[in-house]
Structures are given as structure tokens and as C-alpha cells.
Image (cartoon, rainbow, N blue to C red; front, side):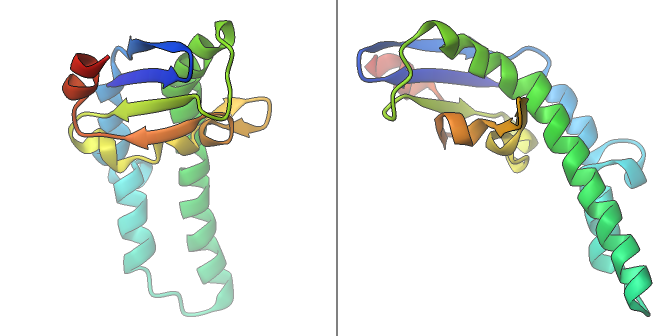
Length: 138
């Protein structure tokens, strides 16, 4: 995955996030009951017969989402956020993310980066399929 931090008065900084594709295991890994898509499929396919069962199914999905956002935030998005600590972040500062393949299905900007914050609360975030054009224009 590649990210580019840019903004007014900031020279665009390209950041390559190593091993980002490992998160595909979380998206559609070997154990369906502990993956994002597996848990979601169970959530959608469930046909709860009472409110207690409905709450259990919803709680399992929300636990999976919470764990995923924590993991995504701390491992993928926090390093990107850390690169902005040495620059003057303004409302115009933005991060352009270019996740590869199925990684784009994950809500990357909603990742928990610590201190009770999520990534998109700190930096304007956009997604693009390829950063090559952005790199050529900088």
C-alpha cells in the first residue's frame, strides 16, 4: 500500500507501508469465523429468532469490526499519521491512499490510531487506485 501526504506548503511525501497485504488474511483468511468477510457473511445470513440471539449476532459482528479497526489503525494507519508529526498540519493537509487489490475493501481511514482518535479525524483522506499520476504531477 502506498500513501502520499500532501498539502499547502508541503512537499508531497510518499510512504510505502510494508506487508499491508497481510491484512487480506483478515479480510478473507483461512478461518471464516475470524475474518471480516466471514463474520459479515454470518451476520447477514443469520436469521435470529429472538432479540437475545439478534443481539449476540450483532455483537459478534461489532467485535470483529472493532478489532479490525484497531489492528488496521495501529499497524497501517498510525505509521502514516506519525510521518505528519514533523510537518505543519493544516486543514488542507491530506493523505491520498492507494491500497492494492482487496485491501481497498477495508475502511482504512477509520482505523484507530491511538489516543481515542481515528485517522480520518486527524487528516483529510482520499483513496485512489494508483499513485503514479500523483507522483508525476508533484
